[in-house]
Image (cartoon, rainbow, N blue to C red):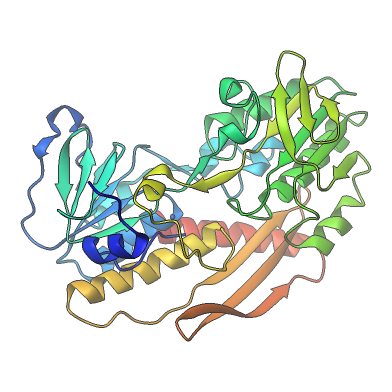
Length: 393
């Protein structure tokens, strides 16, 4: 297939939307040859069953039950990244963040638990295994991929140098490493240059690891190597919260360029730091299939948060249903609410409002909580339960 520009892909595929900022066919890999599921009516295919993709799949069905929706997602369970930092601190189990896709199936979404290997916009089909799946409209929400090559030694050490940035087994393993670290040990956390998934996520993780060390391993130290010049989200609120954690050694403008698991050492442009446990969060980009399809340009000026992905899933669903029915897509702006835990019982939050101005998304308001509090933490729990249900129930 000849190279396509992003605009050309959108025009040829019938997508017209770009990448979202997130009855079953499971077990059919062996029979994926040729057109293994011929279309019988209008069909929307969604690549990626995370916050954006699962929301989009559900809401297309809610908005027009006459449209067939097929969701392609390799994982058989949805694991929430929001709240996963609490697993590291021993405050939640990974099971409490793990949900199935049966709610989507009840809405009539057909799910294929495989990996889409390529998009063919000229013929409007997605490749899976030796077969393909045709579509009328395609929605692409593959999540993030890691740029291992930007840190020397990381590509060879993916199984031992943990990121835990895709909630699941690595989250549990990192929690186990933290629990096994001797009192007096050094935990090193690296933060990549923005943009990456969930801007406040590493700073919430800093707070939760620091809280755990303060309460369980008080002689230990947390070194935070931030490639950015400063805390890039909720700056004043995080700095206020960290006053309770003298065990945090925060080092801005400290980009990790190498790691040596044998020597238990990370390297920045200026220093070498020894560790007992390391959590290296790699630089990130959009999922490979979006990059291959030239869908990564024109990013929206909004946080890469789960809440935004959920909002964009709904907006994209409304647009796709309108296009399928020959109508003008509505002009809708996303919103964002982001909670961050800073201790076992307190959280902080930010709310962003946006509008569409001359075809562009523009922020019109940002509100921060005045301080950390248990009340904000209670609201965070309610928010999580509500949005998980919105995506999957």
